[in-house]
Image 1 (cartoon, rainbow, N blue to C red):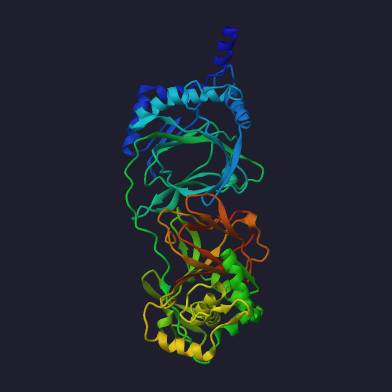
Image 2 (cartoon, rainbow, N blue to C red):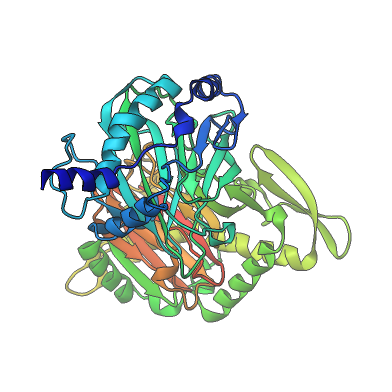
Length: 554
């Protein structure tokens, strides 16, 4: 019996490609890896672009007698392991529990006839080889997980730096995988700030190939979205652990500029020009406030007057065809979407829009781009669209809207915010009291709501767009009211992505999900422990939508 067991174990014992132990080849690999140089032969490729990484073909040797069956039997065994669907701001895919058990004998062999020998190979052969090749200070700790990526699954840009990870690896087990199937390992270059800049190399998964690289502040990579509806990208991946590299301090993400409210203009009732009349009555505002105070969030469908919403949608769609109006927002480890460019200081101009006429049908428009104010020519139709969108931004930055937001939330965004009588649903102050309060405020400082601000952004969400939660998020630790209105989101489904998700800091539990809905104003109060992200928009979506985003702070 013992002899039969040993013979059976021998049949299942994998080995690494013998060429990896050829001393001359090993020295060349090590020299290139440590120097960040280039090296390539029939089995191994070392490349320094955009950061040092290595690809080993035919990593597990095929013995003549087993005809390459070891990995195929391993795949079958792995498919029987328990897996969990993992989904958050950064990724969506299925992953097993830790497969590399602590003990060297790997415990029970049930459903691990091929997995246990592979784990032993990693410990006894690959780990010493990795120490020699990379010269990294590796301890004995190795992680191993089985990952399955199906249609629309993705792992967005990150650098893998966590705890004591030193060498990241992926052993690909997908057969007949093509570039058109998606799921490539994309490697990013970095800019002068050390942030990911652009994808400069994409590695297509190849059966029985091992890819590894040193985890560092510049090792930004991603698994691109799976495009195939029928194939599953499968792999074993994890990290070799050791003394981590120093991590440099990076500047925090800048916030969009914030402004105080624009003073109300005489004889200009902005709210009645834009907002559905049913939301303007004192009784309705009191009802909204009551619901908001109970849940800290609310959605107000058909918020804008239908004709105004139609014009706004037509205008933003028109502007979307002009690249001059849009910036690609990054870096990729934090966000990826289009943001509209316009003069952030537009309220300082005497005229309603900062333009000058050069021809009857063409106007010169000033648009803010970074710190420079650039001019370009646009048609009258484009100018009309820009003006209307600008007017909409002015609406939400107006004194009237600050006061309205105070009234429907109970928060203090304006010093004259109304207090509603719970029994009658009416404002407690009469006109004379309100006037007296205004006079008093002119002579006081530090009054609640007097220094409230609003920052704003117009965003276009299309396939591949997302935001991620980061340690240095500009929204981290703030108390704010998030106000959003979408355009062009008719028929949008949660499975497309693009929804706003709120979670508690340090937890994966979702507090709130806001699905994009056209002409629906969503209000959500975010305290210092809450974080939000926009879920990656995937291939199931067939169109783009626009989001008018405002953040009010007291």
